Image (cartoon, rainbow, N blue to C red):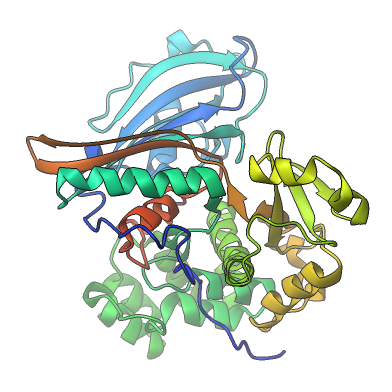
Length: 440
């Protein structure tokens, strides 16, 4: 297997689309109230069916903890709880969650009481809410540590993104505070479970090992798995699960496959995302973010319908206008076993991005054996529209701020938008209970 020449998650842009606007700087997420996310549902619940749809507000809680809390309250297994997308922990978020409750009246469930989670409404629907079943998200973000007059520059930057589209870069949350989730996912796709365990449990390779994990990771290196598990912070649930399996005598493959399939999917998605980000970076550097090439796979944003780009499409009178209005955009690879591949020069670029990570298209043939989502692959637009922009500067009980509000389609990262505005968004991030949030 060829060694990777690229290990970067490519979360920093090669250049800003808003480079003519000075960044406003500042700080994000100083408190949950500074980062508000409201999910726009893909459809309204019908009022009938075996699934109860809950409109849930959470504050300072991860999606995984929210799911576990709701499952316990409704006395159902976690797999009976569905959600359309992950939402940040350090935020106030509102989203739908489904609970499979066939034959059980909602009225029979005791009142829900939690200090940081509230159920705002409940109704029924016929199917489980699944990942991606949302239209988008509305974000309201307060940047702290800036003069309120910086709202003028923030508005200029957002107006530029409204005109050109937002690069659909996958944000740093996907890659974790050790910036290696994608390398764990790479090893899983290659079925190199020894390497996956080393990336998950060994000392950090791409950043500094956090002090509260150093002892546990050193004990892992010494193969004292039980002591390593005892020393590993309790919020690192996945690491502790794998250490427990290793301590019980299971081999690396068994230990990795003991991870919850949903968590496995995060790691696989992180690898797909790193390759996509690399391809996006190349596209931006060549000045082709909003341009179609023969051989591209393009997307019509409304309905997310894919189509192949040929000389006939390029010659059509309305193609340029549709690109300018961001009705259509080129897409990049989220590699998997059945991903729709581009051809010609775009296809060569997709394969080159993958090869730089030491992976070949045929390496995904057995991916579905991992039993996780995300293994089949997909196409992701290189840019997305940003709508309904609001910007204001002001002062509240916590000091001065600039507030930026906007709508993004599902899957897009608000931190990518704010990086274009602030030009100082950190490179890595993971919630302090080990969940990798994606702002989806």
